[in-house]
Length: 205
Image (cartoon, rainbow, N blue to C red; front, top):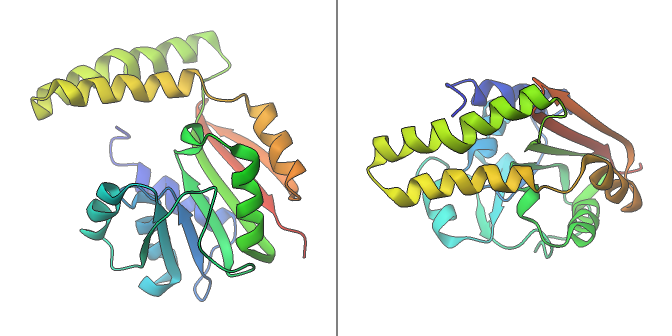
């Protein structure tokens, strides 16, 4: 979907929040392990990354490419002690979370004082032209390509659903407000390319 640029982008985003060798990262909603794999390139040691996902099927898929620990759990109830991680990440899954307030409180709980949070998301562009182009690509072009490539109509429907979740996502301002209310400081929202969103925040030291 990103023409191969996704891994480099994720690696740079993790580096921008200060991820470095010797740290411990929790990747929430790890899915097939895309963000976790990028983190391993930065950290250099499999034990430095822990992936969490509510789906057993996703974790089985992630295990095909990862040797890092993988845990089945929900973002709203993380099975880790307080102050255990230097960084927490979530890639392209925030729009699937039902209880944002509970989730961000959990992120703050498992982070060490001074630890940082990175949320990567695809957001609906503010520009009408950019929004129309993204909708055309994700809503029509990509579903057709996926259906032809896989031969399965369900794959096409899944990509269409992907666009629908982007279109109906919680507004940026509301997300920032919830992150701040959860006790984080230095909360930032960045947009790259008109639709790649990064939410960055720090747990007070």
